[in-house]
Image 1 (cartoon, rainbow, N blue to C red):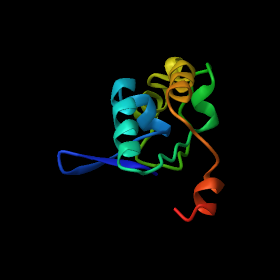
Image 2 (cartoon, rainbow, N blue to C red):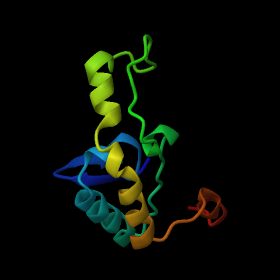
Image 3 (cartoon, helix red, strand yellow):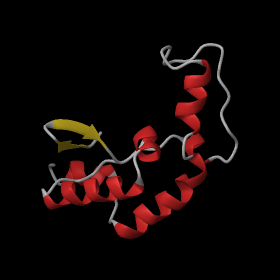
Image 4 (tube, one colour):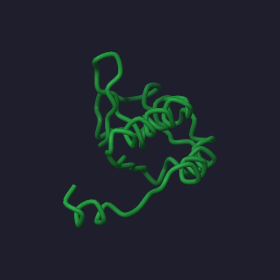
Length: 106
């Protein structure tokens, strides 16, 4: 996963929960910074992040530290805006398949 260094620490960007939790302006600035450094951003998303239906806690979560109310909060924050933010990201940046990076030797 792509990370950007800010204040001496790596911060993950470009997908999953981080895309939902960080304001889009932060994601946009981070992607632009990574691109200026000559690096590609690898983005990923879980299918549920584009669903309008809220997630409910499971009895046994793969991430055992996220259970109950924490699970619901973490997995539902900003999901309503995810499609709009994703479309904006696709419009503002150029993306391609990861195989292009592998074939180019990156």
